[in-house]
Image (cartoon, rainbow, N blue to C red; front, top):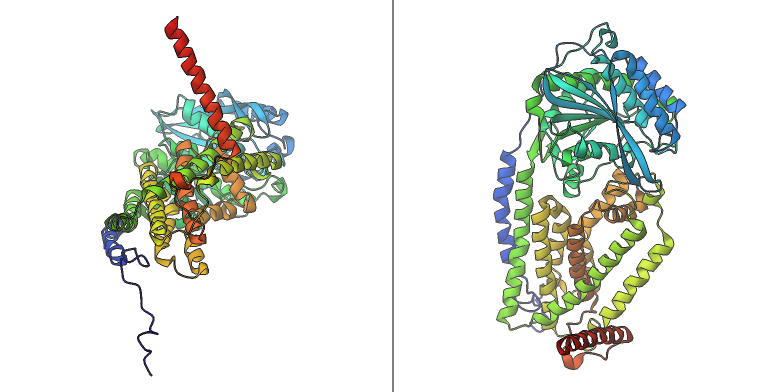
Length: 626
């Protein structure tokens, strides 16, 4: 094969040149630092053992529980908070427990619920005293969304709660088989309100109840009579998990009673729940406050829809199996409660789990190659005397624009979008799935007005040199590094959504001379982290195309905290600068001689500021003369 003449040979750009500014050798070498945290992570894998099973067999009466579930869902199909059916269900539950000597205390509170407004909610608390004041809470929410009878979610859980309470009633007639079950620890049977609307009753109990400081473990019962296999939910409102011993004990008891393995969320789902803590079940508020809590259910990550949740679809055998599993789980906890208390963070892999701190260490280590390469890129710009300041000012203008968008979003949240408590919204509510057309149009117009103010300093007005493009890339990458460090300071698990952008966009300066489809592919790859979160909400919680609006509503009601919105604004600003560089529309912040005349909006703002300053100065002079 004849070699091409040197004049025709394609030469690869020299490393460190403007065509290849990223130090690939440094980047690849730094990945060796990640090997040590991964090795440490491998040594942290453990297999927790379950607590021993109780000696006495379960006495849970599945047929009685099934009849209770049918009675509740048929007699009071609308149990939405504050409704007539909700008030009637309170009296119904009190009536069920009255013959067994269990006094039921009503805990009333108010909450704002999207689509329903301000409502009074009622938690019902029944206590079976034990020899110790340490408390195990067994709970089930009593309400539903009001769009169907809610037979499985959660008349079945309420029925199981009643049967368990009867088993531990102080009178011997309360126990099936003619015997009462004495306990070492105090048992609190909690029937919550607002469970279908973000666990309002559970959050209130975890925040206000006098039992909260004595509670060591919580077992939540939700949708126990479905067709699906027994499942466990462990996600919390914070990046924590219930005690691993509690989860393993629940799995062992379910296996004994049903002959089936307890289904857990997949490892990637557990990681996502740690990076973006969220759950539609009521163990969430307890885990978020450091209390070990789990949910037993036969439904998926999203509770069953009220429209199809009818009494005819209830499965008595499944309700009996899971109810007995819950009873023997309570017995196991009563024997070894100290071992199942507290929260931690971890990811279950089959019967083993990886400790959360090791996962955090690995995620932070995966950040190092990007940081080293980005800092080296900045150092190369300094050695070449490439000015970074205009690129940073351009990034500042974009950041101010996105902060304006965030401010407008907060304003709309205060006016209309933020109705409700800072809790997950019911996926069946109109607020979670119906995009408000006209308010979104108004939001878009205000955002457009902010862009019209910012664009005069961002539009290209002359050819941009390669050095200026490299400075633009460097400024954006440094900003992304700062964003990543802020994420580490708030929730290191959230690096799961940030790392793909860092490691993809680091190579944008390296491919800036490649065809546009190559640059676009590298840029789009950086959005795989946020896309993972969106797909999780779309598929796991069956939100589909409503997932973006649902997440926005979580921010509007305050479930997503303001610091996270500010960090996201900085991330989007850096992404916007890299987008302009990818599309060839980037321009550094213009020098004074290059700046265009002020537009009407800027002129108006400047005039108003000058008027305010002159009035202040005039008032100061009058005060001095007086």
